[in-house]
Every structure is written in structure tokens, then in C-alpha cells.
Length: 360
Image (tube, rainbow, N blue to C red; front, top):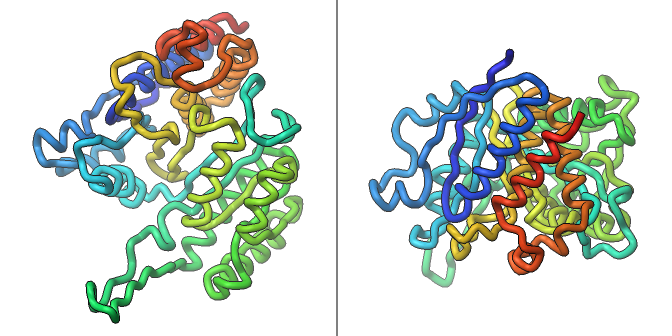
């Protein structure tokens, strides 16, 4: 029986509450497919920082390399200055564990409202592959003559062919495995960012023509991508893009699929340790009230199963999520709508876990 060693980082605010429901779902599905999990919890987050002044202890990164995956709840504490935890935990883990792919499914489940008129689950089902370790977010640049009228701010977008090729390779392979429309769209801005996205576009077509001739290649500027995600989301299968554009269009994607309450993502090192998380924040004002929606965290657990190669388990959990959301039990995914339905964080987790258990 295969055992997966999982580092669990519940984090801040409502993170521990949604993580509990994600673990509940994983424990339910393991009994259906004959796998085991060895969970190890870590207290990295705001409370630890406030108590010790330490964000990540020495040796934490190397220790986390020894896990099959990382399961993260949420990062963000109201008493900690913004940026300290995000840079010290999230970005540091992404960069030092070389999680160079950010994977974001944009999937509308049955029963979930979308602001996109006349579109349903058949039209909204695509994936964004975002380069996650290079570009503007590495922090390259400087401020010169700070505070003076002549102040200059420089932020550098730097990509190597290595950065671009490995992201594109993952995206082509993912499109092939997904085997839906077999279409990969490069999102860029070649008319303005003429150096960086010239590199991306040349590498995209060279790799596609040589190694993936069965994959249809398309290109669109980022501004066109945002328009089409709203007007014609059914046009997309897999989108690949750089770090900054990926950050922007995946938040739009979250709204297209019904909001942060169902949006999950993976920070992936295909050759190393990856990390899966709900996209939404820590929602500190709801901490301990058992009212927050845990579905995004359960979706992150589903993504983790698929990444680990447990495709049957991932499919079982995905169908359980779809069955629950399509049942009409919840009128919506907000705290008010969850309470109106007489549900709670733990009850939603129970309902999905029960659907897993009931599957033949």
C-alpha cells in the first residue's frame, strides 16, 4: 500500500479550519483506493512569527524537500505587516523549492453561480499554467534618489531561455495529458514587451513544431485574453504565460468559475516537492466560527492527488465535490448563504466526505 508523506501547513486565520476539511476528504478517499497518508503539521504563520520573531526556522526548507507534497491552508495575519509572511513563507517556498509552475484550473462546477451570462460548466473549463519563479516577481531592480523629485524606480523582468523552456514543456505535456481540445494558448504582450515575449513566442513555436505537432498553438495578447475569458471562455483549453500576467488572469479566472470559494492552485516542481492551496486568503474575522467555505481547500486536495499520480482518487473526489455543489444544498458560497442553508465549514466537509464514501 502506497504511503504519501504530506507536510501540512494550516497557517493563519481560517486556514486550520479549511485544512481540517481537506484532510477529512483525503482520509475519506484513501479508503476507496487503498493508499495511506503520513501527515506532519507545521505551525509556520503569523502566530509563530509574533511569538518568536521567526518566519521559517533554519533547516525548514531542507526538511520540506523530504515530503511528497505540501498542503497549505492560508497565510496572512492582521497583526503582521503585509509582505512579511507572504515573502517569508509563500515566495520563499516557491523559489527555494523551485516550484516553477503555478497551476490554476478554472472550472465551473454544477450549481455554482458565475457572473458570466449564459455560460455553464460546459463552457468554463480551462487551465492556466503560470511561470512561477522568474520575471518581475524575483524582486530585481532598485530605487535611485528615493524621496527626491528625480526619484527613479526600476523593476526588472528577466527571463532566461531555461526558465521559458521548462514552463512551456510542462504546459505542452499538460495539454497532451488533459487531451480535451489539445490547444495551448500563449498569453503575452509581444507588441510592447518586445524582448521578453519575443523569447516566449519563439520558444513556444519552436518547441511545439518540433515536439508537439499534435497540439494546436495559439497566441493572444494579455488584454485580449481577459476579454475572451469573459466573452468566450469556451475558447480556451490550456493557457501558458509569464509570472505577472498569470497572477492577474488567474484572479479573473477565479471570478469566472464562481469566486475564491472554489478556486485552488498548485505551486509545482515536477521533479521535486510541490505545494497545493486554496487561492483565497485567511479571512481572520471568521476565525473559529465554523462558517467559512472549505471547498477551495478540498479542491486543492483533489489537485494534490492528481499530481501525485492518484488519478482515480482525484476523480472520485472531484465527482463528490461536483455532486455536492450540484445538489442545491447551498444557495451560494458566501458565509451568509452557508449559514442560511444551515450548513457550516465542518458540515460541508462531512457532506463531501460522505459522497466519497458512498461512491462505488
